[in-house]
Image (cartoon, rainbow, N blue to C red; front, side, top):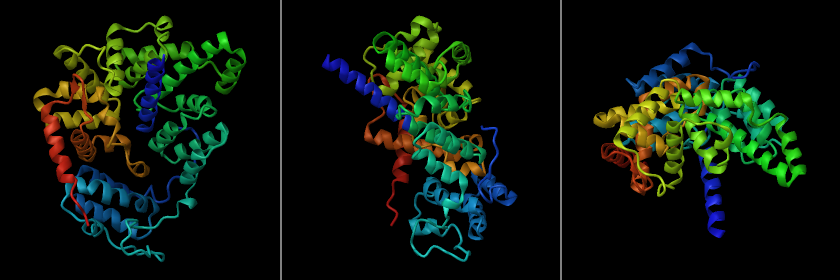
Length: 410
């Protein structure tokens, strides 16, 4: 029994980590000030193209130095998080010199601070909404903040806040229902909507038998059946379309609720991928036979096809195509099973006021960030899971990229 409990807790911990690694409303509200500046949008588009990153960053900095709030919000991330991917030899002071000094009336008084341009985010409704969501006491308060954030175009930030709320059992049901009306099958956080709805159904069914009073409380918090015919149709469609978000959700559902398969018919291929997706993420590979080369190839092609609809998968596909041209499908399949796309390449949320997530995920910056992230994990030895590992071509190139990036910057 003790071993069973340990396994259960391990599974919950894995899901909690996965949620944190994550991650549109009809209402309209004030966008981030300055985000609609055509010059800023053009400069950011040029920077994403990565042809002349220093010149393009300077152009963004010029706009920020004159007081544009949207530009000021993104410069620090670009300078210290992304420019070292292309220029690992630069010191922090050299990186800082890639943008001009602040020309506003209230410049940063700390000469060597990494906060290049000061911004009072308390004056920006979308960022005040972020704070209200973090400390929300009720689902209504959280949803009000979410609507403000979404109206300002901060969709990726919404997904991050959604992921951070899922461990709150009082807010989770209503928040999940709200997210269900916002997220698309192409969103990485969509997996958790399906998982939580399925888990909600299982919890209510169990309490109906052993604790009817608690079952009634759960129903009240959900406000609607967690899983019904609508979810059956939508989930079946997503699986039939080869949506990776649905396959990941299925892997979690059959792990935490084995009875799920008794009322929902799953194609054998989807079930195989789903089982491996959870096994690859959790490390529970002993009871799962490794895929054949033909299966690796089929799974890789499925993920590549879904990447055309689900931008968060593009960095993995682009990295494999660049680093492992001779075995792209195997590279993509193993990377998807290990969920390497969940770490190190999350869309910088402050950038989304002036650029789309699709443009960022398709950029070389996203692929470079993923390569370094994989290299750091290779060096730590956290990408070896029984029979599952990334191809040697990717491991070697990623390790070299991480070594180059991991320089000391005084």
